[in-house]
Amino acid sequence: MVRHFLVASFADADSLMKAVPSVRGENFRIFDVYAPYPIHGLDQAMGVRRTRLPLVTLLVGLFGLSLAITFQYYTSIFDWPLNVGGKPRNSTLAFLPVCFELTVLLGGLATVAALFVRTRLYPGKQEKLIVDGVTNDTFALVLRRPEGSYDADRARALLEQHGAREISEREAEL
Image (cartoon, rainbow, N blue to C red; front, side, top):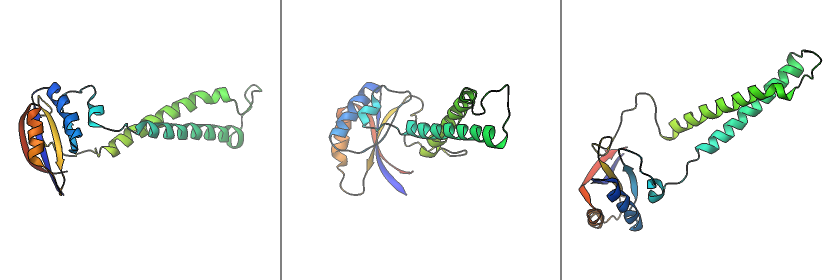
């Protein structure tokens, strides 16, 4: 599916940061903002929601904890009970290292897997950049053009007012 975008390139991060809230205030839909380095406060200016990755980490970590406790309890009580120096078979202190390690291992692996699934990253995927030079020295603001009503002239004027170097319309298949 081919989508239409309005791409504005900026010379520096300050002019980009001034343009983002203005564009959002005029109810234009920001598709993405590209910068060669992280810009503090850009997420809030774009209105990006907080990520749900910590929830995935928590849920899978709790699953790993319950899996470790269940497995250790089953093996030490039912499957292979051993009497080691008269200690109780279900010694919780002996279970702690394995529980901690399995919680951290599964939580970390699930976080990485969820990140790759969410961002659609997979081995061999070709990069599709809308703007040339965004990994080097270009700051870019990309507005998505909906099929219906869209005042491109008003968007261009607003972007030029905030110091856009170059404004172009592009088509991309994303």
